[in-house]
Length: 135
Image 1 (cartoon, rainbow, N blue to C red):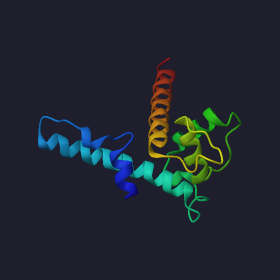
Image 2: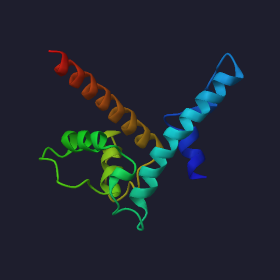
Image 3: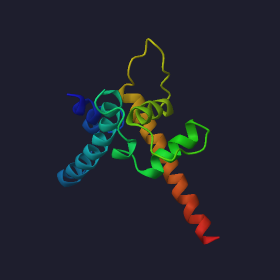
Image 4: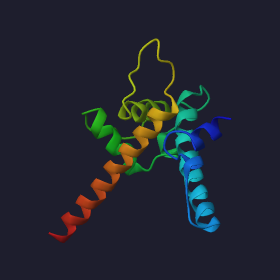
């Protein structure tokens, strides 16, 4: 059930896709399913007591978690990747979620908002990195 929430709500909006051909629709559904699995893994991994202390590199690339760290922590990078719980909460914070006693765990909309903002940061970093090599 949580997978379908991740897949249908927030970022993928898979039910609202309008494509010219069935093949194009199938391709988009599959691509968005893979993205939904990553966001689901982050959210579920971050709130599950069994996995919340695992490394966030199970889901995020080193570039992704390092950019998230620099943006939200304002401290030097740690020697090891932070936990899944850290990544889940920080991604939600990037999506404008505010942790308080009454909010509970982050919802799908803030997770997707945080995911898209993180991907924009990664894209900007990669563009700047490629420019740096050319100059």
